[in-house]
Image (cartoon, rainbow, N blue to C red):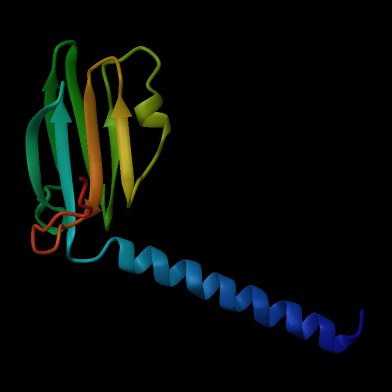
Length: 121
């Protein structure tokens, strides 16, 4: 490879990294909402910016502790035996699931206008 080929590869890699950084910073913006459900029952829904630094969610076998770090959430303690939700780490967009406790934590963008996403006939 010539010197210019290396420079072209470096520019492409830098553009890709900047794109990933931009997507990560806009996904956890001010319109991000935390929605917690337990056994299909809504427990809490509020903007991520208003979410407390530590939140303790009581469950059947103990309590699930959620920790907010900057613009993401993670489960720091869980009563389930395998602790897969704790091992998942921090999530800034998407969901965390604790199947033994029936808890679903979703981090999504706020719905705009309350209109339907699709129309079925």
